[in-house]
Amino acid sequence: MTDIFPNEKRSWIMSRVRGKNTSPEIKIRSLVHGLGFRFRLHRKDLPGKPDLVFPSRKKIIFVHGCFWHGHDCVRGRRVPKTNSVYWVEKIHRNIDRDAKHQSELQTLGWDVLVIWECEMRTPEILSRKILLFLQEK
Image (cartoon, rainbow, N blue to C red; front, side, top):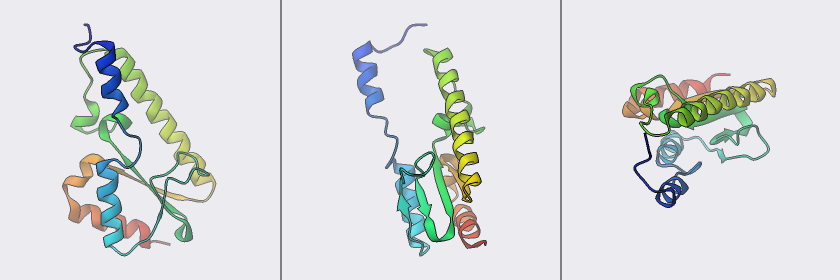
């Protein structure tokens, strides 16, 4: 199946996809800040440049988009109709890379929490999950 957009248009669309400061990430930052926690953003000296870093607690939060990081929810299992082989391989590379970064962080003594985009539909449950993660020793 051919792409519905010409190469120039597809390139422009993909250039608009952000890797940091996404709307789910900003919502999580606001939620965590509202819970009274302070954090650092995208530390380049840590594997995977984590979204939120809590240095004094040795805790890290990644905010993952379900499609881009291959979550097992409906949105994460979706496969594009065009260039599907490329996208399936790309998502698998992302999953492998994420696992590698999390393993490296845990080896360095960090606790890691992944928040999926679909989890943001239930803010009360998500708030409790974040509080439990950040308050545990």
